[in-house]
Amino acid sequence: MGGELLFLLIFGLILFGPEELPKIARTIGRVAYEIKKASSDVQNEVRRTISLEAEKAKEPVTPAPPEPAQKEFPGEGRS
Image 1 (cartoon, rainbow, N blue to C red):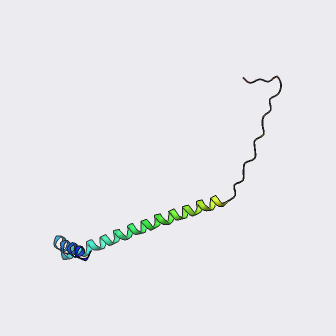
Image 2: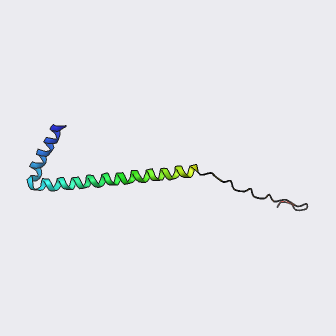
Image 3: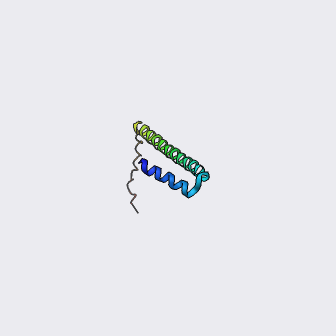
């Protein structure tokens, strides 16, 4: 792992130069931070949603009252 990192550092130094390399490293660091933050926000939202759904499932469900049956009167037929 250490050899690969050293190789990438030397390669970046040769490719971009000593003045651009710190700027690129900062940009990569910011992007990595934003990705980590977004990932954390999504995880928290999923956990919150799951928690809310679990709370809803614990609430007792009240059945709806039955609808009154319609009676047919003699002499009335179905059309």
